[in-house]
Image 1 (cartoon, rainbow, N blue to C red):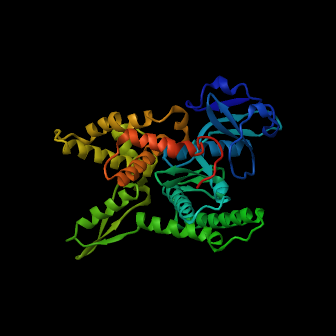
Image 2: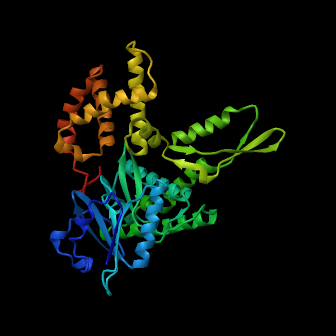
Image 3: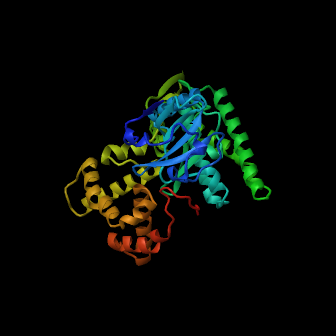
Length: 405
């Protein structure tokens, strides 16, 4: 038997105590933890090692090794996907391999959330996140081939949502996808999404409505709009150089960086601005926040925190202090605002939200309280009101199954 582990997957000795010579479906209950998940064609079980939760999936060795490599490739390209933690092979003549992935904290499967009949606003947010995940996969050159409600997780992202790929065993990595490959992947997604939503409603003995029956087409429309914004050529008048800057700024606002632009002369009166999908990289605000503070956050969370850093910097200068660089302001913001705010939250409640999401919700709550009071109510009042009036009543999203409002 061989156990491969990546460095961040706990101590190797922690994994030696599991009964690898027994099929996953026969593992004793005391070895397992129960986590919310979608349906799977393979046996999936969850375990906890040194406080960290892992998913174990049993599948043929060739498929397990292939998915292990694909998940590593997606991680290297910063695509939202579960992180591969290990691979167990050679378990015996009749036993398949086991792929080990790290459970995505603060996440929920799409299938379970949609089964709870989300509000129209949450429905839109879920489909927007799913469309963006498909765009990010295709920009990275990844053909999925198995997009479904059970193969996607979501996490909160400062009022929006971010979708994550769970299952990559049918995928393939290319330098770049052709339009035909992208359309084929979208067609598969449309078919799977419609089939699974119909299955969910049938389980409840209900007929899906117009909204549910259009789920696949709706995701495809959102996908096409975002792909077009990111990659479509644009005619540029030489006298209007600001059009190039405006296009790049628009992409930055969507959370994408452009590594290179190509201007092709089309005649004496114009140029065509061309963007290659391979040089369009998501994560603009995440990278900027990490560079300034070292914090790891989702894209919308990062955007919100960067706005707060800018407000903090303006406040310093408004008080008459000498101007400071963005980097210096970010360092002071960390010690004066972000860290004190989180430290004021009771330790037993901090696991209900990821740190960046928690700070975002504190900012929203502070704004609401200040609007009612007609003045800035300050951090202490905000934390007391948020903890007692909001956070204590929220379900814990760190590892347990919850209902999403």
